[in-house]
Length: 369
Image 1: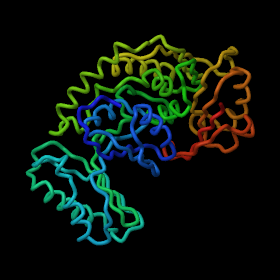
Image 2: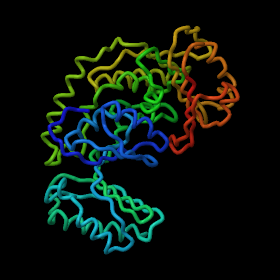
Image 3: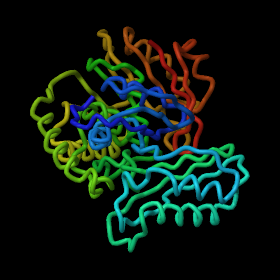
Image 4: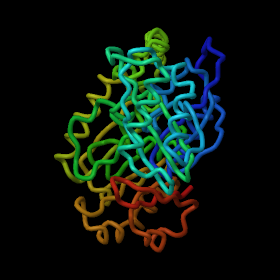
């Protein structure tokens, strides 16, 4: 956990891709945070308020870090108004702030008219903070109502999710979101040894591996302008910059390869950009080569790949060649993404299998270790 002088614990919610909650849990526990519980795409945990900047810059598998302001039961507009009005929102939001309802989702509840719910909630929030001329910083609110239970949540990340690292200016077909790539690496329990992505496309998995421990201090986060966190953000960014100096760029082998030479050039450009964004990165190499032509790698390694399918390549073609992976990497662990449920017929029963959505497509992560 980041060394914070604020002992006031708050409940935070890390949002992530549904199905990859375990990756976020790995990261949070790594830094000493206590997880309260998790639901689909959300991990509830406790942390000092002052750790919010650290969490935004260091947690790589979450899409955003938010504050759980209030949770209450509401079946009527009066109950909704009273619950929001009596919350401790004004503990975080300054007077004259601009409050924006960023997301409103209602599931299986008596309150169903989203426009009316948003209007009532906004009025209650304005009364809660004592009114506003909206001349102050933006505070983005997430309002979730499920089974008549209301979650009033304050987003500390901003409209750009944490997946927007700032290094990917170009991508190949069907690019893997950065937070998903980081989540897969974390679930693989990669220890820094040799890592290969044999179908790297625009390089997201190797780049995420090369920068996994580095904080993203150069991008902007909405809560940087909040009165209660402004100075904490400045101090935390300054302190985390010191991590660049201690980073061993030569630690481990990271190789991304793809038979599409044009997309390898994009991967190299993205990697160079990542070094600029993060200030450093582990050494990574990008090769234009077909995985079937690779020489045998006898040492233990992590093979982590988003296997081509759909637009990238006919799925049947790539699956038919997958048994060659065992020949090329006889002593390695494999973490392979593919929407087909047939992969185990070719590689054998996976040690573990996780299903989640990747760009709207249900995908499996097959884990062999």
